[in-house]
Length: 307
Image 1 (spheres, rainbow, N blue to C red):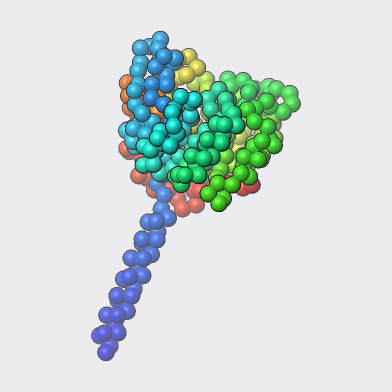
Image 2 (cartoon, rainbow, N blue to C red):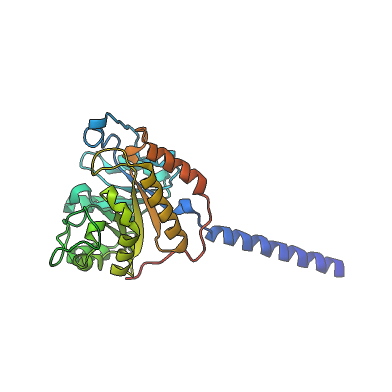
């Protein structure tokens, strides 16, 4: 009887240990879980930013994410995608997707926003919405530069943002994320930022990456109650030329530090439209993800948004 009781105890303890380990594994997050790539339709830059250099990319957005080893896409829609249900089929393989309510250049319309909500209603891996090029203010500069007077102009009013946030989706709500450039980290943005859940910081002019730490700290002070994301360009869209690799390394290594310390909720690479174009920074980033993607994150690294 004693031996049987001991065996039963051992089996129970073993099962408990297995369940405990499984539970810990379920909770464990890796760097890769917090990586996103900006999704654009295939060939989006071929006749614009890439044309002077002769670069070309024909990679579709989901294929670009897979090639980079990134499971999450923030997709910026255009008007010529065709039926969204058909276009979205490859996206069903992704872990998480944000879809644009405000597109590149700050473009938005009620039909486009309605279409985004209709798409998200059908697909549970659409877990948020992005407001691209949201503020209609200069993008070049730093948080410490002289600021424009008054509230910022933007693609939507604070009241319109509030209505979007309150609009039900699959019986609940999903986050709104707004793009902000380093030059726009100013009090004039506060009325709009109060109505979103997340903010992603972008440095349009590569020279301003010298001030990335100061610009990010300023954003933390401006929006202490928001989840913050770091946007990393893999190409110099300001001058339409390759981004120097040391600058790529600087922003990504800072992002990794901030991710592990909980200062940011994710790193966003821009974009799938650069994958396959032969850029050194894209190749470096792909290798960096292979090296660090499976690094574990501290259990307390996630900073929940507050509303």
